[in-house]
Amino acid sequence: MLRVAYLFERFPSFGQTFCYREVAELERQGAEVTVFSIRRPTGEPPQDWDERLVGRVHYLPDEAALGKETDAAMRNGELPNGAVRALQEWGRQSDFLRLHQAAHVGLRLRKLGIKRVHAHFAGMAARTVYWIRQFFGTDYSITAHANDIFAPRDFVVSLDKIIRDAAAVVSVSDFAVELLRKRFPDCASQFHRVYNGVELGAFGQAHFAGQPPLIVAIGRLIEKKGFADLISACRFLVERGGAFRCEIIGEGPLGESLAAHIAHSHLEDVVHLAGTRTQSQIAERLAAANVFVLPCTTEAGGGMDNLPTVIMEAMAAGLPVISTPVAGVPEMVEPGRTGELVPPRDPLALAAAIERIIADTELARRLGAGGRDRAAERFAIEPNVRALAAILASPESIRP
Image: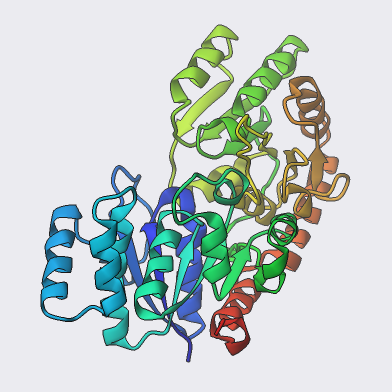
């Protein structure tokens, strides 16, 4: 039986439902998963989480309590000598809490006899598991996603150090794995592609019966999602006399500017910022839609989406998808089969693609059926999590 610990920066989180699904599916497949979370979720919308899983999450103490615990562990001789030296020498340098968090989690992993810890994103949690390995020799692996590898932040424990010490590095697209292999050729064998998984049965099928046609978009209200381009595309559609509704589901720092964009474009009657929704509510909106749109773009600093899970969810619901050829998106959206790809930051091209699909229900149904088939072929959660479990359990993925 696979016994593994997971360390998250925050768990569970609406913006990272794929993490919750992964843990739940690992347990369904018989793994024993112990979950640690550095931070407690705050301000999260109500979700359909299983309390039996969420109730077992071990949340790390705050800074003051963590410091007292580490001091006591050093006085009592509970920490390895190398950990004591590192903690004393590091002091309160930048990112010092990662060392204290590593001591906290590492002591518990040692007590539980867990020999592998996995972190999602090459960020805070990954820097913590790096120190767990330094202190206790516990092997770790990570799943790298998007900005953590496309636009990594500068820390003393760099992306380079995290990857070189990892037993395995998973990423969620072929695009990302090839990028990492080119950037770190000496570590090429450590990289594995495992797609995020989606529960196909959780999504009812789009019926294409609503009038006027409904455009749905889902994601954090941030630049790389391209929602400003979607709003501009909707303005072009209105100017051409098109009848439609558009819902953008999500929250984020660009909420006010997007609302102002809608108002300035006189689109209040047709474009709606819907806020966050539970997973069951999202499934309902997808089933009611005629097309799913996510016009991903690359930010000035290199940040971009990798393999947006919401596209998989739309495909599982049998919706045609319109997006852009950014990062791993073409591994999901195949023009003429599952949807359409348009150039990033091109609202006119986006409007034309939307117009073609919402005007032709038979085309929408055909592309939606192709998307459902693609989701079943590549993104079903059970085989993808089984592949991940094999990586986590494999002796070949553990470095000496």
